Length: 300
Image 1 (tube, one colour):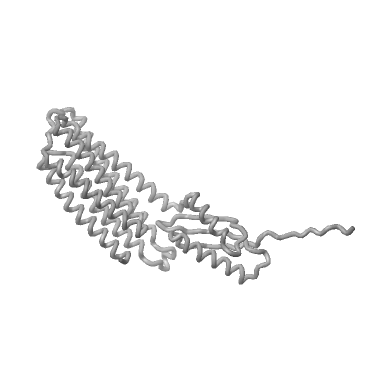
Image 2 (cartoon, rainbow, N blue to C red; image 1 turned 45 degrees about the vertical axis):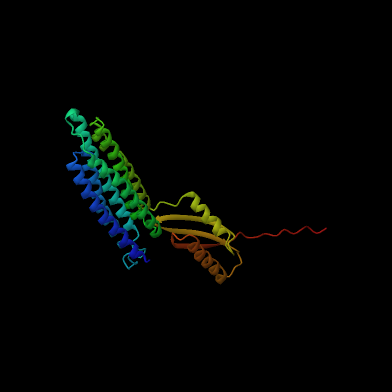
C-alpha cells in the first residue's frame, strides 16, 4: 500500500469515527445529565480537527523540494504537530475550567445524578478510542510521521478522558455527584500532559536539535568501520522534521589520491543513508590522515 493511500485511510477512519463517537457521547451527556460526558464529547470533536490538521501537514510535508525550498518540506509535519498540541491544550483547559466552575459553585447537592446512558457511552468510547490509537500509531510508525503520532496520542488522550468520565459518572451514580466535575478536572490534567509532550517534541524537531548521544555513537562506530576510514574527526546531526541531516569529517590515508578519497567518501555516504533510514542527507568532508614518521637507528 502506498504512503498516500495510508494517509488517506488514517484520515478517513479518524474523521468519520470521531464524528460518530462525539455525536453519540454528546447525546448521552445531555440526555443522561453528565457534564463529564459532555466534556468528553467536546474532546472527541476536537479530534476531528486534529486529524484534518495531521492530514494537511503530512500532505504538505511530502511535497518535493523546489527552488525556494531545496531542503524539502518536512517541517510542515512539525508545524502540524505543534498546532495539534495547542488544540489539545486548549481543549484540556476548557474541560478543566468547566469542572472547576462546578466545584467552586459549592452546591454539590444540586448537581444532577447521571443516568446509565453516559456510563455506557464512556465504556464504548474507551474501547473505540483505544482501538483508534493502536490503528493510527501502527500506520504512523510505518510512515515515520510525527503528525500522525500526535494524532494517535490525541485518540489515546480521549480514551483516558473516557476512563475519567466512566469513574466519575459511576461514582456520581453511587451517590457522589461531586465526582462528575472532579472527573472533568482529572481528564484536563491527562490531556495537558499529552499536549505538553507533543509540543515539546515538535519544538525539538524544529530547532535543529541533535540526535541522541546513543544514535550519534552508533553512527560514529558505523562510519569508523567503513573501508578506507582511519577515524571520524567530527560528527554533527540535526533533526529536520522527521528526518536527520548529518555533517561528518573523516580522515583517510594521507597519501590517497583524490579519486580514492572521493570513493571512500561516497561509500560512507551511501552506507550511512542505507543503515539509518531516517537520514535524508549526509555532507562529508575528507581530511588527510596523520603523517607517519619512521625512526632510523644511529650507525654503530
